[in-house]
Every structure is written in structure tokens, then in C-alpha cells.
Length: 343
Image 1 (spheres, rainbow, N blue to C red):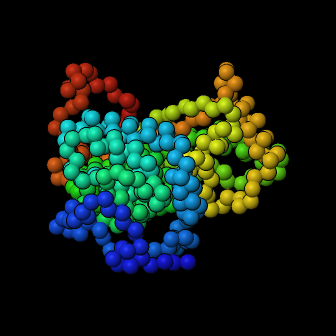
Image 2 (cartoon, rainbow, N blue to C red):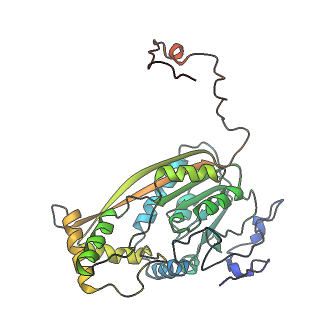
Image 3 (spheres, rainbow, N blue to C red):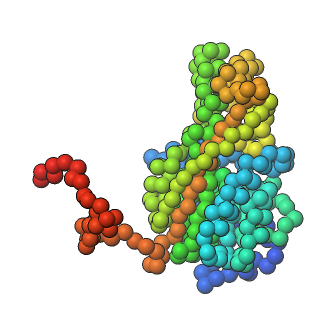
């Protein structure tokens, strides 16, 4: 099914807490929307990995519960720490992945921010009595004009995007020249033990497997996507956060409260068998148990840092244009690596 949003963006349910006229620039801050497939195939040759309807339902449930925000708060604080090394102000800021406002609260404590806009695809996360502008939208269909923001901060939100290259391209377009993208996503090593536990449990109990844990990109892939989207000076690094739980079932309950449960389009739609669940918990305890009997869950946080292109940024020289030798600059003797390659 294809749905068309009106050109006035009325379907985007904007929730302003103060005069939206502050978004006015020489170009419109809210861009006209285009026809897009909300659910179903995105186009020829494109594959939908996630069921966005399920993703939104899971996130709405997480918004109602509001009991499992520690990982997102940690990600927000780590992104804010990156700004401490940058000696400049960012007057206009977009937060993609508002949740309960952890990222916006951290940013509001910083000087130099005149406008802060939060975006989330779950309306429950936007129903807060805080002085920020809030927009209900998906990362793959942002309603902002070109060169609107100086900074985009996105803590653990982009890993649910079906079209991650397209989402990054939109973020680059809505950044002003020399604007900064700071984003974190869950990396490929996240919950690797839980994936293995369900694989073994389903094979043992049901004789077959179904997808349980989302596929996640690694750092090299993400660096390439940033370059493909037109960002300059991309940097990708990763870190790990280990969290202990009483048992595997407690971990699964926490993931449900986070809104991070299975939303793959090819997932099994029925309930998980009790025997499969208990077997997975038993296997996971064997794989990730701590000396005190608790189990450990490992989350990989991949951080993306990149800039919208600007003429003032450093650029690499043309290969072969060097006028000096590296050995001379280092004060050492050059050691040949072997015979030169023949043409």
C-alpha cells in the first residue's frame, strides 16, 4: 500500500511548544514531502529488512513504560562528550531519536544553542512537557529543508532504518555547510551471544531457525556509507558496553522495555514456544554467565562523526604532488621494501 502525504506536511503531526516561526530561514525549514511506500517494497532492487509498523509499535510501548533508558542515556552522554573537543558553537540543532529527551537535556546544558528540534517516529516519546520543538517523522522521510541545522545528533536511532544510505543523505542535505553529524548505532557484535543461543535452541527444539536479532553494519561499511552520502572527514569508531542481568529472561524483558525487540519482516509471526525460550535461556547462561551466576549482555556502540562539505575543510593533495620525502621529515633512512613493480 502506498500513502501520499499532503504537500503541506499536515500528516506529519507537528507538536510545537513555541512559535514555529523560529524555523524560518531564507529557505523553507519544512520541505515538501513526496510519495513514498510506507509499508512494503521500497522500489525495484531495494529490500525492506524491518517492519516499520512493528518498530513503531515496539517504540510506542517503550514510551509508555519508560523504564529502560540507561543505554540511550549513556549513548547521548557519549555523543555530548565528543562536542567537548570541538571549539565552536552550533546554534541550530536537530536531535534524531528523541525518546524521553535524554539527548536534548544534555545539549540544552551547553552554551550557544538557539534552536533545538527533536524528531521521533513514536508519538509517545514526543508527549513531554519540555520547551523544545518536536516533529513526528521517520529518519527516512525528514520534512526539513536544505541547510537548516548546524548539528545533527542521533543516539541509537538509525539502526532501524531500512534505507540507511538514504537517511544519511537526507541528514547531510539538512545540514548547513560545515555542519556536524554525530550519530551512534548498535554495531554487529551487539547481543551476539543471544543470537547464538536462539539459533541453537531452535535447531534443538524445532529443527529449524528463524531470524531473531537484527543484522547490523560494521564500522567499515558505515564509513563507506558516510562517504557515499557526501559527508566529508568521516570518522567511525566503536566501543562496548557490558550489562549484567539475573538471567536471560530478564535481558529479554529489558529489550522489550527498550523497544528493541524483533521487528524483522521475515520474523516468525507466532508466539515463541516455551521449550524454545527455556532452551535459549539455558544456552545463553552457558555462553555468557558471570562468576556470580548472572549473565552478561554485550552492546557494541558504533559512533559516526562527519561534516557537511565546506571549502574551508582540509582536503587531500593529488597523489604524486609531494615535494619532499617522508624519510627526510622524520629524520630517518628510507628502507626499500623490495623491487619496484614492473609496468
